[in-house]
Structure formats: structure tokens, C-alpha cells
Image (tube, rainbow, N blue to C red; front, side, top):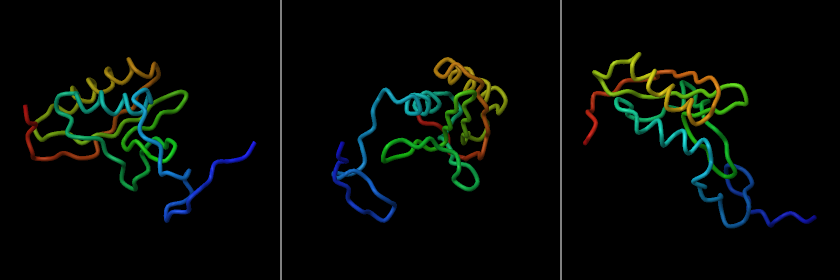
Length: 116
């Protein structure tokens, strides 16, 4: 079986035509979208050294690591949000999607308030 043509880019080799477009059914994308809807969550975070993410063909979902036995989610919270309650909400939301243990790490807090 022949392989598709490949273009060389600075970050490595990708199929000609560029990285694949996000698929709405990717679990990591669904987890990231669900986490962002939790009240008090400002965004996802890649970790201290950028190590937290799920690698997909041609792209990466930052702040979410999905393993067979657990899922790790790293978040940034809004100042004033109750940390433990918000982490519990994130854990509950994500566990419904992944069906495994969910570890939530609060990486940062930002002063901006959520817009409604």
C-alpha cells in the first residue's frame, strides 16, 4: 500500500494539504468543550512545561490527557471561584464522558470575570 504524499514543515511531516480538521466526535475535543462550560473555568492549561495535551493527527488538544485508565484535566479558574467545588464539577462533567478516573489540576487563577 502506498503512502499519501507528504510535505515537510518545520514541526515535522504531515500529509499533503495540511493537518486534518478537527472532528467533532474526538473524545478529547468533547472533554475540552465540556470543561470550558463549567462555571468558574476560564480555560484549559498545558501544564508547567506544556506536557498536558492529547495528540491527534496533525494537531493537539491542550489541557486534556486521555489514557485508558484515567483522564487528566488541567484548568485555569476565575478569581473568586470556589476551587474544590469547581474541580469537583469538572471531574463530574468529564467522568460522564470518559468513564474513568479523572484527575483535575488547577494550574492558575485569572482576575478576569466570566462574561455572561
